[in-house]
Length: 333
Image 1: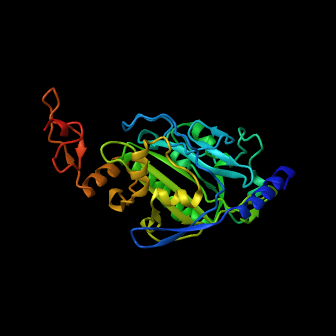
Image 2: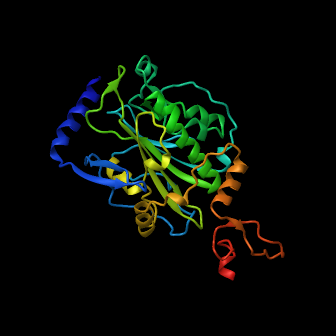
Image 3: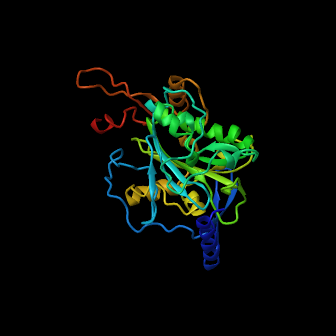
């Protein structure tokens, strides 16, 4: 451990005694409980980016709240906030569109340090012989829409030590499901990362922290069915249904101390982040992009809109609105 990192460790250790740790329980639909600790390690900013209340018009909607000292690193396909203390990203954020789920570039499998991390990121020696996978935060499967984004997905700043059974099992299932949601909802805004706390064990010469939990929050901000959902998963293999790990976005905020989607209008943010609707999301990953859309429409009661265009042609939009009209035509009838 270098002197800078040693100093950071001591500062965080001292600061941990100045906060009272509070506990909160986030309850899923299956009545499972997660014990969430508010460490006070991050402070929500007291300002919000300028935003429009109209869905779909907010730029950089995926970026969490930051402190003045935070430096956001932006790559072609994702942005991140790097933690020098833990030698990995605190969060990785990106917008994933339906078009971007179409694979245009093959996996490189070339893991390299992130050239934009000025304090130097982890490297091959940290993971060699550790028994942990180099687990993607922004998955390569979400970054296959160009050769550049695919290559950047293998930066070590986008890696976190993951138990092999977790990385290749339930975490992979969640990544596949998010791609399904991007196709079904046209686009989703994803923020994901490790739960970083004081006292985690480390691996390699750079003492890369091994998280006990990982999180992922997803926002569908496409009209008419705007919704959000969060996940907290232990860094361990599991064959359980992903629904068992679903929580409100508020619950993930309490656990991590991160303010998600601060660019949303206040009223919308409060409503979206405090609610959890399991049936509002599909839970079956289907390989074919077209099959994903059709299956979701059938399972969700979608029908073709009964409205007609100005040219007299029946609208091709699908809707679950009880009136039988999509959000564009519902106002006319």
